[in-house]
Length: 402
Image (tube, rainbow, N blue to C red):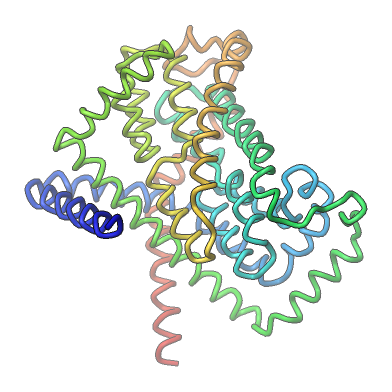
């Protein structure tokens, strides 16, 4: 009976959303184009190189090399193998959903157990410095020094999530003693890397082609989710669902002395981070302190758009989703708490409250870095995306007819 009710609920929800799109096609198309622009100009060009290089590193055994070296660190701290260090580094450098993709990939290669994969994905799927510093701090709040607060809160919260989730599934796995954890051995690390490369029968050209193909397919799926949730966000706003839920959220956040004016942007951020962060920065009725708390929470929560992307990766490797979802709530709370704790010392140094919309003179280097990188993506990002898609099509045609 419950299964039938779920089917009916799914059908009614999708039908209702479909009718809403048909009733207001202009708004839906504009929302879709906005999602496509974000994907084409920023997401694809910033993630594509990391995805390609990571696939090559996995194929050539570099990940195995890193895994042996990081085993003595990752196993005691987070109860995951050393290869988790590679996933963590790539997740930080390239941002979500890279951590989920590589966790799923390593699970499929049997380098992670199911429990280890569930632990690993909870703290490796984080935002990247470019998005937090370029898009949010500089692009939305026009203050590069806010990047220090946002990134510190986000990554400290992320590490605390990893330490918390190390206890997940503890009863269902083999206990590793100190003596069973391997010490650092360059010889063994090289041996593992060499064996992996030998076992992989593909040529370097084949590995490169497969890496480009895999990265492009993954990012096409990511783009589909971004466009879908951009339209969904717009539809929910048009039918006043956003406003209704915002009233409930407004009551909840006022308990914590946060301005109720942020409830609408907060809900938008729970759906999709980029749109939510921009709306939060535009809410002039609230203080910058409260804006930073809410931004930190939605960054840690990841937004349902990214969670849907993660769920698709985890399903491929039969990794359960619920530990990741619990960890996202924890990350949001941890990041918000760290924002509160770090606000006063960092505000004393950078004077956030004195210059909420301008960049201090003593941070020219930081501003130039984030502004330049973000402007390069905005100018050349679409061209890079189109070029890589053409290369993807050429590889597909060549594979089909040759």
